[in-house]
Image (cartoon, rainbow, N blue to C red; front, top):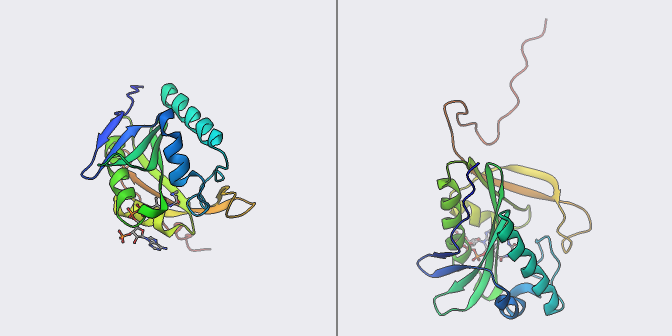
Length: 200
Ligand SMILES: CC(C)(COP(=O)(O)OP(=O)(O)OC[C@H]1O[C@@H](n2cnc3c(N)ncnc32)[C@H](O)[C@@H]1OP(=O)(O)O)[C@@H](O)C(=O)NCCC(=O)NCCS
């Protein structure tokens, strides 16, 4: 399979996505990594020490180098770091995760950062599915996925742990965009089971 990594720098009208680097640790720690509201529906707990942020970044740097996960810092025009966004590759699928610092919520930044990654993923000939999930209570994130044109597929019950929201796995909403082909035409995202044939 052809394996091309995404660009390390992506420009949108108001934002720059730039490959995450260790120098971002202070800014990320200050902007959102410690914030219990930002991390409420994430898989990781808020960081208490900057060393945790550095270890997190180190993991993401290695994941980029190994070609499994690509993480960018989200910067405004003035260079201020306001969030992060990731794309993960699994064979013919790519999925996404994103975070914006609380002071910048509600300005369309998450959707603006996500759109080019979805577009890039779907422009890859070997990718047939761009998808993401969010906690069933994370309506802002669900809306971000709708804004970039993803379709709600349904609820994945007990899908993932969001440790701040509870001790047991959480229900998540799954969104996607898929490519159709002659041998796999579009299936409605949620279909009732076929009716049973009449008995007797
Ligand atoms: C989810 C998150 C990334 C959204 O970032 P953002 O930059 O505010 O997103 P956008 O402005 O592009 O879009 C948010 C949309 O959600 C809507 N929204 C916000 N809170 C909402 C709520 N409680 N119910 C319904 N819609 C809501 C906003 O109105 C906006 O939609 P609109 O543009 O149609 O008005 C941000 O809230 C965040 O970082 N949350 C914490 C981390 C997180 O949960 N990440 C996602 C993990 S799956």
